[in-house]
Amino acid sequence: MKKVTFYTLGCRLNIAESGSMAQGFAERGYEIVEFGQDTNYVVINTCTVTNKADSECRNIIRKAHRISPAAKIIVVGCYAQLEAAKIAEIEGVELILGTSEKHRLFEHLDSAMADEGTATIRVENSSKFFGAATQEVDSHTRAFLKIQDGCNYFCTYCIIPFARGRARSIKVDEAVAQSKDLVVKGYKEIVLTGINIGEFSGTAGEKFEDLVRRILEIEGLERLRVSSIEPNTVTDELFELLGHEKMMPHFHVPIQSGDDSILKAMRRHYDIAQFKILIERLHTAYPNASIGTDVIVGFPGETDEIFQNTFDLLAELPITHFHVFPYSVRKGTKAEKFEGHLRGDVKKDRVKRLNQLGEVKVIKFMKQFVGSEQSVLFEQRNRDGDFEGFTPNYLRVKVPAGRDLRNCVLDVKIESVDGTDLRGTLL
Ligand code: SF4
Image (tube, helix red, strand yellow):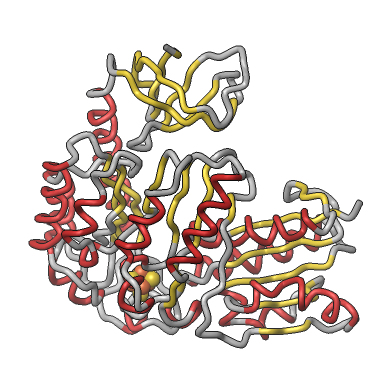
């Protein structure tokens, strides 16, 4: 049996797309093995969000060749889209597919491999939407449905609109058909995924709210989540839909900075006042919801005072989960040329302070559920032998269990907070 392994860098959409490619290999009779084993093919799904991400991609390609010198290496995705020529120089690389072409991997595979000696490059960008309902490569019970790709925003720090192209979306009928298929396959939860889901209505000619409503109507589907949504794109209609019993009370709304001057320099599409109103409204309507956000720390020009504004705002708002990233330059972006780039140690210190705040806040949030009953969708047994899964508001719960609970939604009594997880017992 031929073997293939995957290495995925970057965002959730990349993870979903690797899942889709892995399914394609499995359907063709390949065994999917863990990265680090000797294989026939290695697929590296790349990211190009920062210069650091680029060098990480190159290192992984070299590492894959060292581990499995005879393997044919296929490099796909965002970094492949922008730096194909550079990748082609690395030993072992046979096929390079950009962000649109990676969806036609199997069409390219045979012809490319016949061309011994030189890497085949296919990086034509397309305005068509490609995507298939998929699960994570190492997935358990949640399916990721890609409904949107690309972005038209051109935030000054971000290269994504160049790598993935302009915003485009799935048709609502197609998304509903794929969701029904996932439910028939036994998935209980679907996560709607995209680069900028808020762009759906603007580019699809159909409304995102209609897509959500129709998926919620599917019989047999128990849970629906939206992976991340830009703060300026939450409409009143969507806000109402978030209260549907199948819609999980778990929202992810990136803030990036808590200071208007930085948001302006980033060219984000909202200001702090709007962001605050949205978060307070979400919290008032759905008090048990977890609310996550992304923050970029140390953007050029971020003074101590500006950083303190971000810190104070995040301390004040009912945000429960922080995803903190130090600003890291990406060549080709507007921000690369900005004045006032910060030293690494300053950024590191600010990241640490925000992470400490985040930890205090998430533990405080979790504590309020001790003693409550929660329905948990179980995913897998962990190394300690406990089964773990997620509450509707995306808190990880661990329970002792003698039997296999995978893909079961069960009621759990929450007993305690254990690090940044919850511990409970089955009811
Ligand atoms: S919204 Fe901004 S940060 Fe997000 S993908 Fe688009 S350009 Fe990049």
